[in-house]
Every structure is written in C-alpha cells, then in structure tokens.
Amino acid sequence: MNRKTLIIIISLIILVSIGGYFFLSKKAPVATPIDGTFPGGGGSFTGTGSMGGDDTLSGGDAFIPGSSMPLPRLYELHKVPVAGIGFIEEGKSPNNTIVARYIERGLGHIYETQLATLVESRIVNETRPRIMEALWGNGGKSVVVRFIDDKDGFSVVKTNIVNVGGITTSFARSTSTEMISDFITTEETSLPDHIPFMATVEDGGNKIFYLENGVNASTGALATFNDFSVSTIFSSSFTEWLPQFPNQNLITLTTRPSAKVAGHLFFISPKNKSVTKILGGINGLTTLTSRDGKHVLFAETMGDAPELSVYDVANKNTNHFLLHTLPEKCVWGSKNSTMAYCAIPQSIPVATYPDQWYQGLVAFSDALWSIDTETGDVAKIMTPGDYRAANLDMINLALSSDDSHLVFMNKTSGTPWVYRIAEISTPTTDISTTTVSGM
Image (cartoon, rainbow, N blue to C red; front, side, top):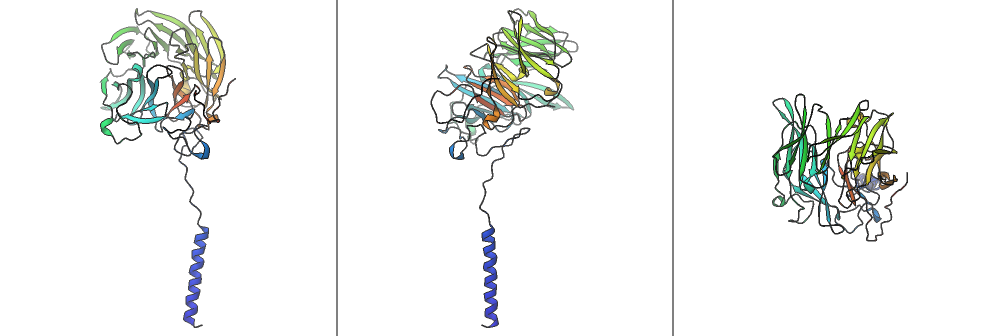
C-alpha cells in the first residue's frame, strides 16, 4: 500500500469517527414546556390550558376551550392582568347563558368567555391604556374605567363610563383578533375628575354612586350609566369613605380602615337620604353588606390578624367565625342571600392588617370557604393546591345569579379566574375533581 492510499484511508477513518461521535452524542429533542409560572406564586404548568387539577387529562393533554373534554373546575381565564371582572347573563337558570367579561389593564381591550365552553373572544378592540380599576355594572353591559392621566406635570384620576351592550352573538366565537369589523363599538362618557371612590349597584341595575371631596367636605351622588344627571344624597365633613351599593335601595359607607383606628359603618337610603349608624368603634373595620341588607360581614384587627364576623342588622347580634380574612375577599350569594363565600388565607404572615395588605407588602395563599350565616356552618370547598394551581390571593369575587360560578382576580398576578361551584349534572369520567369540606 503506497503512502497516498494510506493517507486517504486514515482520513476516511477519522471523518467517520468524528461523524459517529456527533451522531451518538446528539440527544433527542426535548419539548420545552410553556412557562406558566405566576408572579409571586410558585407554580407552573405545561400545555395550552391553565392549570387546575382536572385541566390535565389522560395522555397529558391540557384542556382546550370549546373541546369535548370535561371542563376544569378551576381555570385561569386570561394570561394578562385585568382591571376588573364581572358577569353578563341571558335567559333563566338552568338554561341561562353565563359569560364572564373583563378588561385588560394595559391596553383596555375587552374580552368575554362563555363559561359553558371556556371559549374566549375579544369583543372590544378600542385601546384605553393604563386602566387601574374597572367596575362592571348594568348587568355586565357597562363598565366604569378609572385611570391616571398625567397633564401639565399633574396626575389626575379620570373616571369614564363605557357602555358595551349585550352578549355578543354576531360572529363565531374564537380567539382570533383579525376580524376587526366584528368588534363592538362602545359609547364612552366622562364623569368628574378626582373621584376617590365609587360603587356600582350589585343587583344588576343601572345606577352608580360616587364620592367627591371638597376642601373640607365629602359629597355622595347618584347617576346612571346612561343618564348623567346627578342627584346628591349625602354630605359629610369627613372625607375618607369606602362605599358599597348592595341594592338600589341601600348604600353603605365604611370609614377607611387602619389597624389602630376605630372604624364605623353607616347605611344610607337613596330615597329619603337618611343615614343610620350600624357598627362603630371597631379597630381596622372593613365590611361587606349582603344584597338584601340584612347581614354584614366585617373584620376587626385582633392581635396580628383580621378576624371575620357577621352582624345581624335586624337582631343586632354578632356571630364570630374564628376565621381570619377580610370582607374584601368575600362575596354574598345571589340566589341564597344568607350564604357567603370567602377566600381564607391558609396562613397569616406577620403584618399590620389591613394596612400592609392594602399596600401590597404582604400576599396570601387562599382557600375558598362557604359560610352559612343562618346556621353558622362553615366549610372549606376549594384549595388551589388540590388543582395544582399557583398560590392565589383572591380579590374582586363575584357570583353568577344562580350561585353556580365564582369569578375573581389573583391580586398577585392580576389575572382573572373562574371556579365552578356547582357540580356538572352530566356524568363524566373526570375523577380528579374533588371538593374538600370541613374546617
């Protein structure tokens, strides 16, 4: 064998060896999971659906909205922070259509999700940037948007009313945002600047109550989503009030809470403008009045935690539950007026309550409890960890008219969620969904 042939053979052996090395050492491609880690929460998921215990079905496939898969019990409706969430419904139970509506905090786009299928549609493509708060009302047909407008070096709190209309039926529901001609055109009107606090009536009516602060006084006014003629029904030299509008015949005002300051609750009649003191002298007082005005959930600062109780307005007695949470994390039943649902922290970080929770200095990991104020029974009905969901600090809770669905926002991430309280009547093979009862 001559020298030239030997060099060619050695070169071929080297090339084959190098090629074999790279072939054998090359790993099979690994599917990269979608990053579903929630801000402030320790949890992640893979797939296209939002994680709940029954989101992951056989074979590892995630729930696909509109599919024939069993609906998840706990579900994240949107991946982007929203400013507020509410319901719009058509028909009567059990054949009613229940839709969740929410508006994005960043761009102000409005979405709705049919809860029977969990299919989401963008219905309003108009841009309203920097929305910090949104209050749904008028049966879900209107929303109050609140935002900061920087003008001439000053920050001004702006409040606008956006009338959206009824449930969208004019186009096929999808997540596509390309069909611009099918988006709803809204009507928008401005309310006065610098409104500190306001409330929309909770019984589906068309009314709004808002406060305006002067130099040494506060006034409360009524308006509607369509008629902005104002009726002043309240005035006070005190300017730090938190309003609630349980029904069209009742407005409540609670003094802004602080752990070391005694708080008070007053009822106002919009008809005769009478003011009645209901509770007072309670440190850290925060409240939530039932829609019929007969019961008040309230929390007071006891030691290092807020303790939840219920006050019977007619009988003037109090029932203590030995549960630690704030009424802002609760909602009263729509169908059952004596039933309340509350997000109860599974542990209470050491802090000054409610001050430091309002300031965002502490966050909770909640479980959902039901409270029967008539019998005094309490029961834990949902723990997000049982559904492999992230920690949820639940706020802005709302119930559908038949008490079957509860929507809320995660205070930590700002995203909207739904929990199906009612069992689905049609039998399914989904055995991973369970509820936990008992204390």
